Length: 307
Image (tube, rainbow, N blue to C red):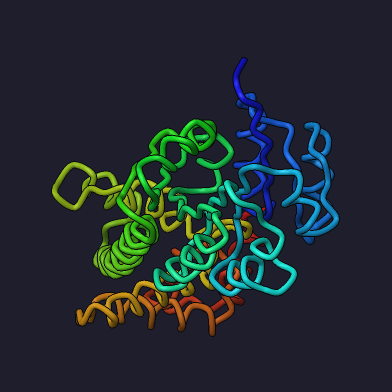
């Protein structure tokens, strides 16, 4: 008989809820879950989840715990605070962090967990909320080979690509570099779209033609065609302020490695301008409005007209 492994999940937000649901539906549930928002907790309860009142009860119930949190400060608090997961953890437990965090913090938490005999793996996720819903994420894992093999079946229920990047922290390294390149690409697409538009080539036609040549990319098809062409940037997606958080972590890593990053510094400037203009909660390709000179009020007027 196969060993029964009990799972826990903390953080049922934009990405965490569908990931948790897919792991549950993949035959690994029910889970013990926690979130400050009662709505996703109730939805997971309908799938059979048990609700934990605190970190102690969740830790006692789960052999493997998944975290899907906004960023480094939240992960650090939940892991290292006096009443956090490590304080309640037990030898042999595995904690899998699906959040995007600074590399140095990930390695600090790993060392603290190791002292208690707890394994910690960084497993940040890439792609969109729709990919999280569809179970087609890409997950980059930093861990020992042994831990990777133990957690891979659960991750496979939420992702179509699971890559072992190396030892602890390397999953975060790859995720941060992925996003750094993505943000720079979206800035480049913004400049190209607005320039072409003003020179007589519509955005949708430019996407079609660029996709036939060497400028083709994931960002062109997904961020360009789906968001930047219609100039619609939904909420509850990968918002500008979250993108700013990720590129901040990437720039800190580059600084720590002694690397100059002028293109990434332009990208963070564009994200900062976009947030200051009112687009902080909108899907981050809204930064194209900084290139086109479209104000937040004009953007809202556009949405109202399209309703």
